[in-house]
Image 1 (tube, rainbow, N blue to C red):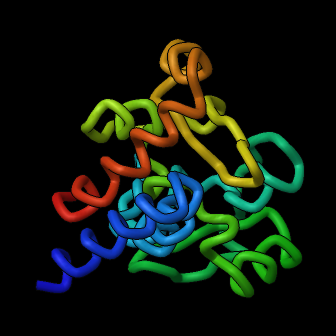
Image 2: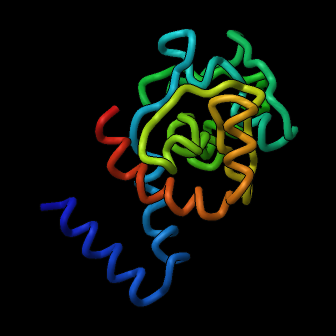
Length: 159
């Protein structure tokens, strides 16, 4: 019942306000769902600092000295400052689609990601399977984000 109400509400928002409004209304839903842990179970996004992707524009390994538990997994950070930024607003810094491959999500499935295959769009982190898949993703990022946002609502329930 709640899912039906949400979907009807989202459809109404799209009809009235366009896709931008739909995107805004579903952002909370996109932050929901599982988190990709990578090679180390229980450690988010292969242990890399999700804040550094946005603030430094590159992958930086996190440290055991700076960790935070969120969504049932441990997030590692390279500094106390990055940890504090994440703690204050995890949805702002967490990777989209739980850190699963953004291209795969856009295509209707999930896949692992590699730390060096990433894109930051509108201050949001999108990770990819590898550099080859990142090249595909870069072919039409706006369309893949639109498709990924829609697909993640269902995919996140099945992880």
